[in-house]
Length: 100
Image 1 (cartoon, rainbow, N blue to C red):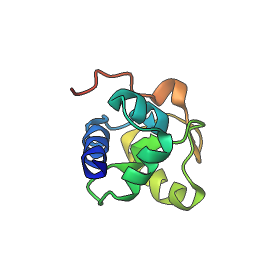
Image 2 (tube, helix red, strand yellow; image 1 turned 90 degrees about the vertical axis):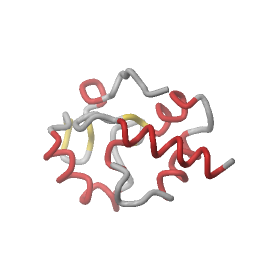
Image 3 (cartoon, rainbow, N blue to C red; image 1 turned 120 degrees about the vertical axis):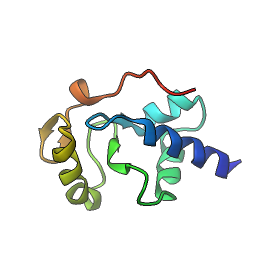
Image 4 (cartoon, rainbow, N blue to C red; image 1 turned 135 degrees about the horizontal axis):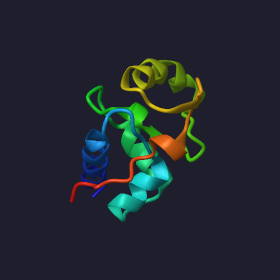
């Protein structure tokens, strides 16, 4: 069951268009399963092929140890930013359509 959830999280995250993001809670809501914390755990099981920088906290940030690694991705993809450490969720949040 946990593996299936992790796969679903990774598939959704891989479908987020460049320059856009979802929050951990958004991912749980789209999947109609789990909670933000479970999404975070599933993301931690990811590999380098999953664009982890496209999933942020509800305030548009990442944990501090990941922000420095995420910034080049955000800049390259043209992600709307409030500050160099915070994504502008009002401009960068993906509204779908989401994959089935």
